[in-house]
View (cartoon, rainbow, N blue to C red):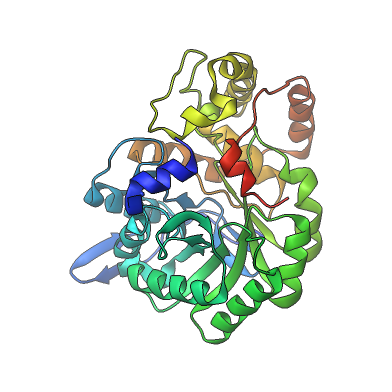
Length: 364
């Protein structure tokens, strides 16, 4: 299922500051959320977040399945209890469902977490697959997000995709006004080119850029890393586990239901999977060397690369959550990173990361 079909069928038609330690117990509304550990925090363009966040898209069935609201709220709270303070959602996820669940889950600890959400699709206009970053639409989207998230401010507001119809200066100017009004604290872009990042940053400081980035998709290193480093902007990688390929649970014989996002992705065709098992073998090799799981290694590598990267792996499974959060305390040395690159350079991956429709909406 591509993004267009998923959205149609799922709603409308669908730098290093933390140390391990005990945290205070927070009491609210007869409920107790106890954060048992503080993991490393990172500074992303002035936004302080846990080094590993939680992406809250799959909870609405992006990879197939239907999930219970109470179970997903419990999962979000479990992440907080284990040190996560950075949660990612969007109005189009569901649409609206993800924001609603995130808002309810985190209401008792709102002041201790950072919530990121996004505007940029025509959800309210009944066109949830169409790009829309008109200033008046941005304002409507923000008001809706504030209500669903049960908050009076958004820590990080992203433009979900660059809208070629609307000048970036107008988008950034609108978000700047929202920041001045206190409704938004930080501005972000998702899947934006270096050119767009510079245009936006010149009007309103960009704190974070979100992009797909993992050991199966490293294009951001050449396309936007130099710009991010120059301007002091953080990177939030989504799909840092390569849509589960890097965890080792997918084999060359894996096939995906039509409701699973991977069914339409070139990198997950039968032919591509058979070829791409080489990266899985490499990750498993290095995971054994570092005494971690494959999922943990995929994140350890990324977190060791740059101090301004904070990935947001996603899951609907508490065991998987516990697994990838194990990456928070492990890092690679400079020599290990160089050695890994030598191994990695021998691998040639097959298949693009996105289907044609999704790719058409990615800023170049």
